[in-house]
Length: 419
Ligand code: LLP
Image (cartoon, rainbow, N blue to C red; front, side, top):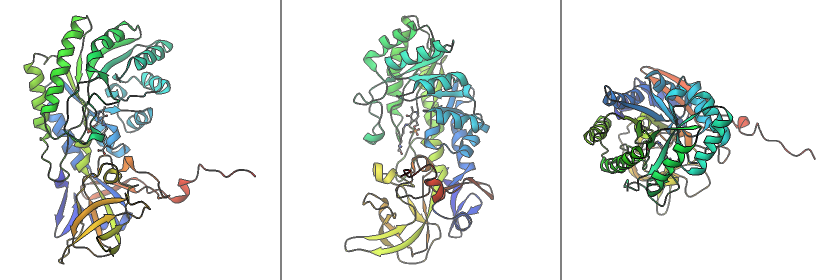
């Protein structure tokens, strides 16, 4: 999907539109998504699932822009949500509640009520108190809630500690050793209906083996739960498949899906439906962040390229020391120098790339790659910086899918004391 962003005569293009004209028309910093890249990544999942009992629920948290969700909804995608806010976005974008699963470790009673009223497909529940709450909410509405338990398979996904979620020392999921008893508790609650089992072992995972280990552990449990008389219809393997930011070599999406489905078949569980919850792998490389160089600042130890995007626009480098490729949108025939690419926010942690070899001058346009997942959605207004505009390119057309914020909007809800 990287190919939706390619150089034509030395100028970076998003599909048929040049980055230079996007920046001129819409300003910077600017998030740019490619409809073709979103479609291609989603279709890789959908095609590998075709003819199998499998479905894809796109993780809304990775990119919740309505236009992005709408592209997926038109392709028939389901969604994975973690709040009633995300449910509202899915519905506004043309997604269906009956194709939506509700994840998250801290659902409020109000969120449960909204999701039950809308008719979501499944609640991925993470604890006994959450089961109790959901049972009570469902009872108060005269409904039965479909549930699966998120089980912690305690496998090492070999990813960054901040984004690994399936290990024992983690806040997520029901401990493997408690899972069977928790299923018994769920089965005994009159307003819950157990339908599946779920896990999510982490994010930016670049190997298939941790998934196979997780599935093996889940299937072990499924057999015990069914021996206890509770039927498990679906197995949700979560999201987490990695993308190429730098030199990573993640498995191809189709290969990943087929390997998992074949593994589940081979273990004699092919009659169950399998759910996938991809976020990063369907949106990450379908987006870039365009930013302009404000100043080049030579320093004693380092040279800085100060750009107009900052940690409030793209938090991943500051938060996780994440690598995002950065390249000039227009190739210059000049000597490259080494720069730290940093934003204008008043924090040393405000950097976007370190020690990058770049042939640039002040005023140049840079593209920060792989910014379609956990990019805009994690942006903030720190330093009273209006959030960037988002644009989606579709062939030769560019559509503003979120207007740039303006400063007045930022304090519109604030008031000073009367005296
Ligand atoms: N399902 C559940 C239950 C999740 O918690 C997540 C992500 C996903 C699916 C989607 O995972 P993905 O396919 O995108 O890896 N902000 C971090 C990533 C946090 C991921 C949280 N959970 C980052 O920027 O790297």
